[in-house]
Length: 378
Image (cartoon, rainbow, N blue to C red; front, side):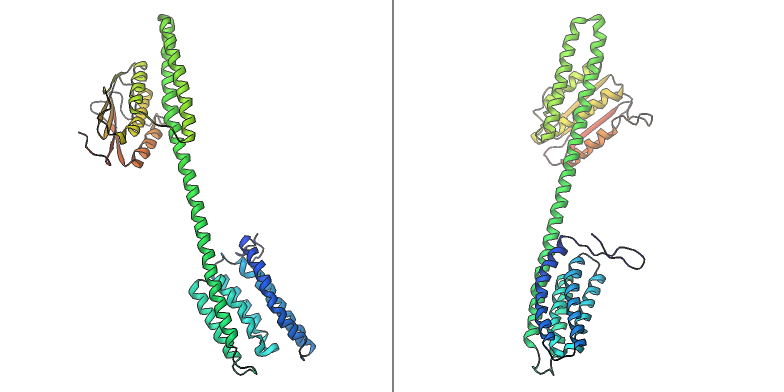
């Protein structure tokens, strides 16, 4: 909650957040030290005006010390130095009233500096205040206040180390939160990419087989049941894949994708030319190549207008070539570009390369190659 504003109405960087509340609780305990000075002022031989002024300044010191430093932890360095200057000025204002007895109050700005400033600056302030305490009390009745000066430096150094640990913990917490956000984003991207792969292929296959079943209904009713069974199986498979994707346990079989590709290409009236086996493909590439085959064949069925589609395999590469119309034109912006982009990301993440382009004299090719496993494709 920001509550301070400058003359132009702009909000100042003072926040009453969890850190400020924790500082206030600890500072409130620390300001009990000022009670010693309050009692000393009240029981002194000073006149009433001096007593009132001293108690008022001690109260102001306690209020400023409790409220300001904690709210400026994350503020620009200029605001933190300004807060420190205010605390020092309040303490120095006590010197004409209380004399050298007030030097002990310089412990407060020393500790505030330690919690607000970087380590080197806090150390410089602590040593400066310690020297000032000795200098101010040098000619006092009790002599130089070495004990108070050493106490001020020791407390400031301890508080500076404590503050550094707090900042490191905050940085660690922020890093953990950022990693968590990155993990969530990566998981969302994975699910979106996998759902595109699953539903794009499955719905294309279902659409093709439904159209084929409609055509067969008039001239070959006995074959319709087989197509309807295929549609049901495709729908069930897609549903299972969606559930597995959400749980992150779905695996892609290259052999299974080749069989599915053969079926959907045949149903779409496209002649498939497929490899007879996948034994030559390195095991590390089979799942990825299954994704490549699925996405590429889906695009062939949807957009190519091809009569033939060939899938070729090597130890570390796969290539899908059709003899259709080539790369989709600007008049067809929905022609699967996002699928190829997702496929590019998937292949790159696996340490491979994806090359797509038109073929001569017509058609389109998709080639994925893994550079992290042995063997080179020809």
